[in-house]
Image 1 (tube, protein in one colour):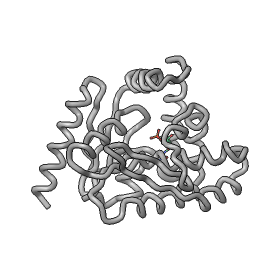
Image 2: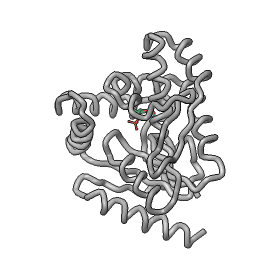
Image 3: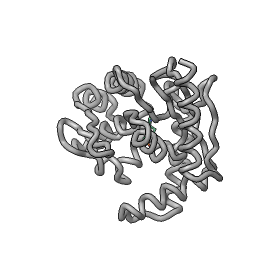
Image 4: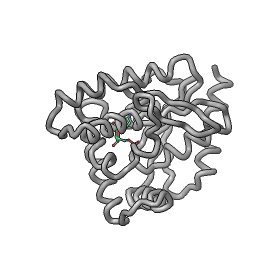
Length: 222
Ligand code: DC
């Protein structure tokens, strides 16, 4: 069974899908991590955002794997654990533009489909229900107000010891929303048959419970 969860930055996709992974034994695939790996490799190789042909080469050459270790997902880039490094503000600042390059998207969509093969999986991203898995058994569009999403990301960053202001995070959220919604290919939008959940005034537990009920109902239907 494939559960697709799409939504903007900070809508709670990551937190919620990890909880579902833990509670229901689904594997969690964070597709944003694949674009973040491309961005990290670019930074390491000193490749500029304008140099699309080199970025495409990187996307083609890198090997991305996800390991589940004691309820934690480990992201491996060419065999190296980059779970933390792909979340730095340097990577976050360029990842949305990297993910707008159409050939990069085409390559990453194939990577994501391979990573998901043959598993009960909950997949989070922006275009999962529309492009990557249009036949997903259950599609969810998770949303929340801009300020609420920025506050969540800010709290998360502070907890991880990152030196960043709320205003910087809000700016980044706004910029990413714009980029994510205006992509020529794979733009963030609600799939026609997706269930919309607005988490602005909901706790994580409430969102998790709601999704669990949706999954259970779908499993009974199948
Ligand atoms: O979910 P995230 O913040 O880790 O995603 C990083 C970036 O990758 C985000 O700005 C948009 C892009 N992305 C995408 O274009 N398509 C996806 N399926 C997932 C992420």
